[in-house]
Amino acid sequence: MSETNFNIKDTLSGIIQEQPLIDEIATLGRLKKVKAGANVVSPNQNASEMPIVITGILRVMRHDENGNEVFLYYLEGGQTCAMSITCCIEQKKSAFHVVAEEDSVLWMMPTAYLDSWMQKYPSFRRFVMRSYQMRFDELLTTLDSMVFMHLDERVYKYLLDKKQASGSYEINKTHQQIADELNTSRVVISRVLKKLEKEEKIEQHRNKIEIL
Amino acid sequence: MSETNFNIKDTLSGIIQEQPLIDEIATLGRLKKVKAGANVVSPNQNASEMPIVITGILRVMRHDENGNEVFLYYLEGGQTCAMSITCCIEQKKSAFHVVAEEDSVLWMMPTAYLDSWMQKYPSFRRFVMRSYQMRFDELLTTLDSMVFMHLDERVYKYLLDKKQASGSYEINKTHQQIADELNTSRVVISRVLKKLEKEEKIEQHRNKIEIL
DNA sequence: TTATTGACGTAACAATTGTTACAATCTTAT
DNA sequence: ATAAGATTGTAACAATTGTTACGTCAATAA
Image 1 (cartoon, rainbow over the protein chains, first blue to last red):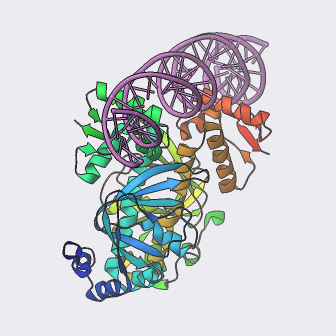
Image 2 (image 1 turned 180 degrees about the horizontal axis):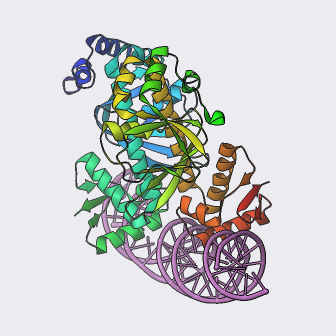
Image 3 (image 1 turned 180 degrees about the vertical axis):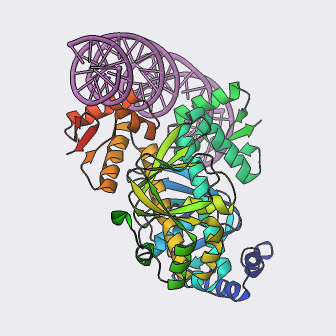
């Protein structure tokens, strides 16, 4: 366990200032390790814990009642799923699906304490507010791509976002996976990627796309 | 001025608990009356004031760099434009366009004080948090309609939302206005509305649509 | 009244996106 | 090695949405 022996307090101190809050979170929360592809928040689940990403990346998806899904944004180190707060406080089921995009380490905080932490600790308030702001902004950018862009631009933006999040020019996704995240079909993605390849924006390999 | 002699403190007391904060807001803010169709936040403007809706309805639109616009949600009595906070704190220009959907009365709060109010007053924090949550949720519903629904369903949802916001089964919009808000063309809206009429979901009159 | 303008209807066509079907290639299990 | 499954390519076609063009009708101003 040596390489995975995280000191949660050290991690939290980068996010939160008050030592008592760090102690509370460290005491009341729990570590959770998830493998790439594993569910962190399942659809229609009543989340009782809010995850903070320590290492790794979470992918947040929206879904409708027919099982269609669409990618919203990534959560990276130090970030949290702000919508969990809403879900918990209002006690309604999440229309979110949160999946580990890479092997990730999370700190799960019981949502029962969120409200009191918001009351007691200014830096927790700032953390939550900042989360909301960032997610709100990203959500709008995603919405922009849906309503203002054609599919080829939208796919390209998706690839660039993925590159930005992962820090790698190589994207290990199949056409089917991309289609699922953009709520379209595999054939359409294949067609669009071929077009992007002809425009020399990407190079395609098996199970892998390279951004040029 | 008798019928427009609002008591801002009475209005605020429905939203905010602390009397000192009510006094501060009443002293530092200003009343603004806008006629239907007037701009409240113009595109690419650096908002220095955050509006609270006292009476009336504001329509919040998103726009891109090409001048295309799309409807996001309405703001009604007691609600505020949460994104103003982000815009102001981060000092970046708004990608929003806020328009009076009906004749409205607003209370404009200087954004310079927002941060200190958030620090000092729990009920202002709750107010801002609740605004973020509600807007986040509405934004997701709007996003759903863009990515999961066909245009006819999306238009119908748009009409139902407008009915909900205005409290009237009669919608006084031209096809062109609807097209602008949904980022499509007049001809397409005419086609879709004709279809909804045949399905007996609406009735059309000049400058007016009736929800059945 | 007449002219002008705005709102709406509709046809014809174009562009984009979705669907179905099938082939080729690579990977993995047996 | 062979079979089975997963991944990608591509054609043909359908459905949806966007564009252009032009017509009718109602409201309004001159």
